[in-house]
Length: 144
Image (cartoon, rainbow, N blue to C red; front, side, top):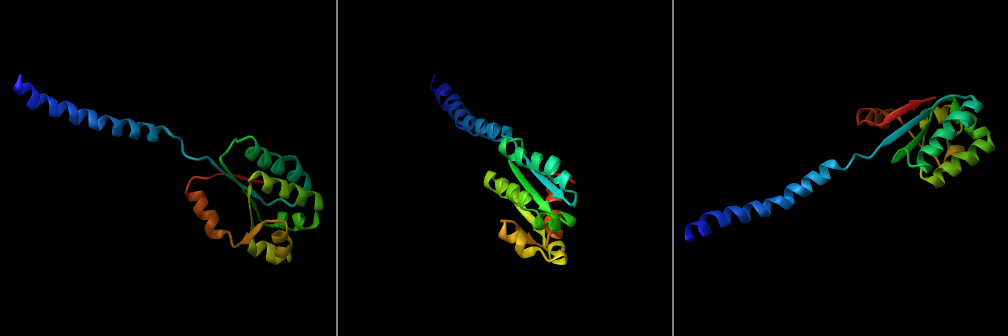
């Protein structure tokens, strides 16, 4: 009986001590990664903005279809947005919903609209490197 106590008891206690760690690792391994959506909006077409880009981007955040949603204003879309009050109102609503708003500084500067975009709550910055990093790190990307 003493042998059982000296041999099996430490083995049993050691096994019990490891079980919670194994269970914790299993639980954390089952938690899904955050889903990340980048919408690259380049079109200067107002209907594309209203009927597709803005509808999907805004609802993707509101409905929780994606954890992180970012809209990137790039190219002719920056000029369109700077001139259109209705589109600007839509952008403000997206920001309130938690959509991350960015614009390419090189493009916005070329159209002379960087300050206008900043004034409606968009972070204007050079986007070549950040876009490359997002693509390499697994963001799902839609381009319009």
